[in-house]
Image (cartoon, rainbow, N blue to C red; front, top):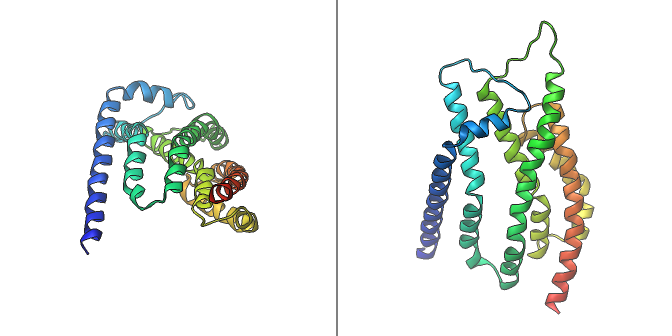
Length: 233
């Protein structure tokens, strides 16, 4: 029983470390939050707030998002340190190689969210305005929308890394991923509907890169599988 509690205690301590770094990064990020806010609202131009606390809450949400993104390397390192003891040598080698790549994929997802998904979504959704329907977007709702979109895209762009990892540890094979492609695409659509803002155009925008990333993951899985067989010989 003692080893189990040791793992629980280690998990608790590493969670506190992660939360501490996110908090410190968020506090530091808050010092520049006005400049960041001016940057992220460029796609809409001007926002409003309808309650006294909205502007403050929006700044806090943006600071938390910035803190989380800034502290992501530390968070991933703590996750690695926790799971490393249960991994085999070849699995550890995989994480050392693809760990930095996962950060790059997450960053690409964040960039895709801001420069591609956000402008297209806003153009479509705001296109329903008219002379008697004038958009008045609150800063709180906009930052919440942006936060969910950024985190969703960041996680979605990790899909190839996940498929490579599942192949490396023997849970999946390229053939299995190809056979289950239809099921995976349906699951992808369901996941997209859950983690993205609740509108059809955003769902479609997220689904297209998900399918592309799945196919890229299958190709990478084939390469990983061949390398794995070579290592085991």
